[in-house]
Length: 112
Length: 114
Image (cartoon, rainbow over all chains, first blue to last red; front, side):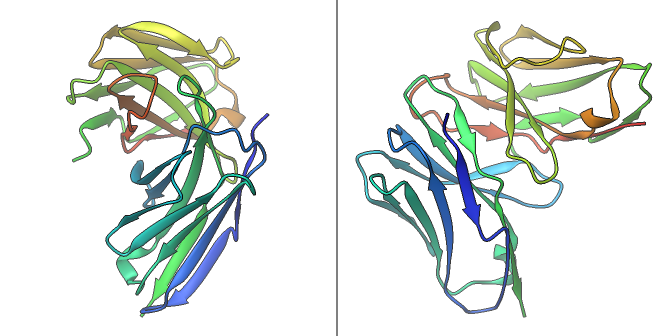
């Protein structure tokens, strides 16, 4: 059974810092991996999707990497801003018809 | 606007009440989902509908009863709930259930069972 772990559970950084969020999964036979953002009291917004054959995806200040063999993904946020404060969730899909398995998220706070 | 609208945003109900959660999507998607998000737990998939047919039911207690009258609307009927059912209930939709179709989430219904 796939398990997804995100460490740390919470993180506070000053504005302008570059930071890395971690995601690990127990079964390396994945179809894709996605990173989502969730603002308080809101639903999830998809940020980046990495196919199992890809090593990384970039969108603006966000870069997500995937190392399938070691069961790890990282989300790199450059030049963090207070507006980046949110919970970031990682989710993996085991096969094209499989459901997503989510981690518990990392709650990020970017301070002024 | 997310394209997926959930009502109500907040709901408080007693254990003997019957209530319904509503979800509506205007994205032309064919698949709709109910997820449960409890504090400090990963999102749990409850039900999946594809073209109004239920294709997945993840061992959800019968006190939760989904209904999908058409591809744009999804309901979750609730009756005789327990306090541990208090959570954020999220609806999502996607173009189809398989492949890389991204999920689009609503803002959820915060349910409190007293």
